[in-house]
Length: 353
Image 1 (cartoon, helix red, strand yellow):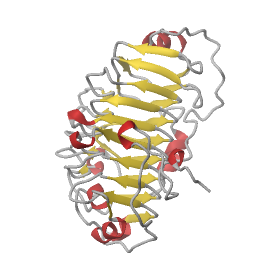
Image 2 (tube, one colour):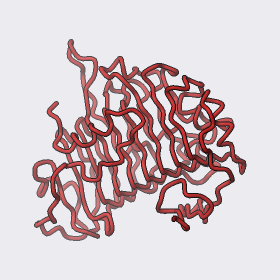
Image 3 (cartoon, helix red, strand yellow):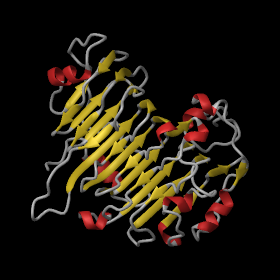
């Protein structure tokens, strides 16, 4: 597959262990100009892409209100961009199926009517000399998706290696009733780099979400798919009730030398099984201390701060854990404003210095 025009900057960031894709504000790598097309409120995104996408980029007017009534199937890279301060609003009854890079920048998606995963990877048959199909980048930047009942990304039990998933300055709001895994690569695929930065991922209602965060259980390892390393990096983010009865990640194998984990300056509440989030990133295993980079996190379970004890579960030394139990303004309504710490998604820090 030809490298996408907006992949190069992300790949540069993703290539380094313990670095998130936090510098990828414009995946296209080129200046973005306001759209010259007249796109009316009520237009369907599928029609808009067919008419106005140019060189793999479609620019939506600030604040435009669109629908998405039929699944969009992609076999070429696509970058959908609008205004982060006044995002395009998309009311969706369907999502995307793709075998190519896909990025969203400055969009607000109501996914409450979608009855399938939001992003599915296209089914295919491997050639005799292939171990996997490659996708460079799936990015969600300066955007929001709400009412998500099924997976955010679903590999469709296919042997894909996604080089980089980048969630930055975004909100993923999950309806936890269906108990689905957010990044679901069960049955064939895997991810070389998953980066969450300055973002909030949460599920309500609290009592219902037993789904996982990431899964490649019963699938292939990154090294089986042509990759060399696997990194999970979470920084300056807020995670709430991602899974409260299952291990955070369900990996085919764990504690491998090629698996790296970085969790920095983040708030993690009721996300994990048996009071474990950090160890849960490695499927409940301790792993090797040298494969971890952890600092400045506040991890709470059932109203108790477990930041320090979480570090001992992964054989890592305590590195400046933030003490105390975080209190949100109204988590059940998606308001995670907090006052007592500088960790977490910056948008919620009321007393940021």
